[in-house]
Image (cartoon, rainbow, N blue to C red; front, top):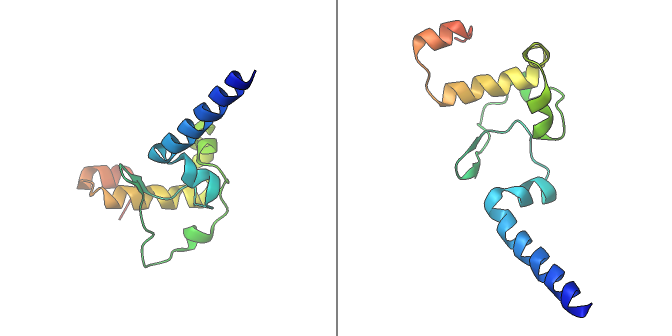
Amino acid sequence: MKQITLALILGLVASIAQADDYAIIDDIWRATDPLAQRDEYGLLHQGKHVNATDFAPRYKWRWVYYFKANEQLIVQPAYVGSMQTALRRLTLTDPVRRALHMP
């Protein structure tokens, strides 16, 4: 019984140590914006200009947005604002900007 308990504890410690590589620790221990911009290294810093969509209500967890229909997402100002910011950061071409009704 002691060996099983020790193995479980070691497995838990090893999984927690690896969790930081997958940004799981950020979601558990820190209050982060679920719509915050991310890249391959983790969260990006919020820009110096604050928009009204930054204060719009949003869900607590990012995964909730994965199960919403497109029609539900486009009526949420926080989601639309974060998508526009991400698309602007990725420097889209003019035809794509026109199709998405972006400036």
